[in-house]
Image 1 (cartoon, rainbow, N blue to C red):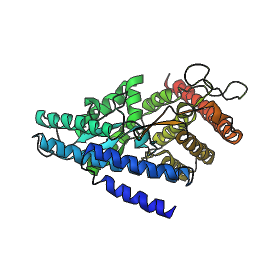
Image 2 (tube, rainbow, N blue to C red):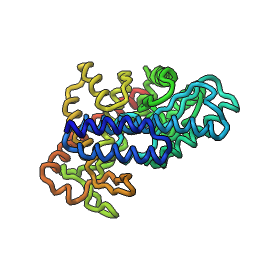
Image 3 (cartoon, rainbow, N blue to C red):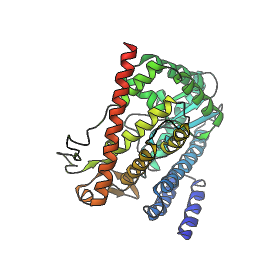
Image 4 (cartoon, rainbow, N blue to C red):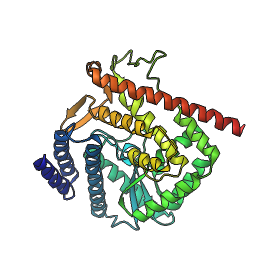
Length: 357
């Protein structure tokens, strides 16, 4: 294991010297190979951190390569400071080896035409480099190439305020995505100021909290009335179980909800749980942590395909894996907890709606 650790550190270092998008892809694949050797050998929380360290290093080098390409194309260096940020599983430091892009840019100062032109082009180049390096473009278009996620700080602050004021499904969904934001490259100060704006607008806003909770309680049924695990009945994944949306996302959503309610600034689920436990207000957080670690482990062990060194997975556990009695028992126990948490959130939402009616 020590030699593998040393080799992995060497590959981490090599990522930051990749001179082209293709070279960046090759070094990511080399790092990925070392990580796969450690899967199910070291604790899942440590393994997940190592995977996300790789993703961060790849992203930082992609930013460096994007700046170089902008100079080569005649745009010159960045006209001001900026921050590259990530959302989704990357924001929570929970990205798998097959996670896609979820990112954005925060640009310093007030908007103007030349600045907007530079960073829209830059964001597009950056997204393309990340795609070459193995990160599929986000179907929901949460990327630095998209105007909605590529703005000056003042434009971001205005947009966050607009989302907070609408309380409809789509803007609230955007706020939930934004709540997992994490700084990766560029100006840490811009990211910190962005987070201040986000949390200041959420604190004490009961209507917004209820709207977020309304989005959060949407839940894929995973157990029937008898407490039996519901598997897919039809389609390509018939007989399988959706680990991502069946158990992982409901736990992420529950912990996020509590964290936003208490002003917890951490973005990762485990760090959020650490801070929530310090409050001493909730009894079942140890069980939530255990279920979450089980969900992480199951998710990264779902069957995957290897295409030219890059991995893809449906996040479904197959019928064959579900025949493992110990794994199935762990899954069912986690789902029973998810059901209890979901019912608690539903009661909380009904109470909040009564207070507002």
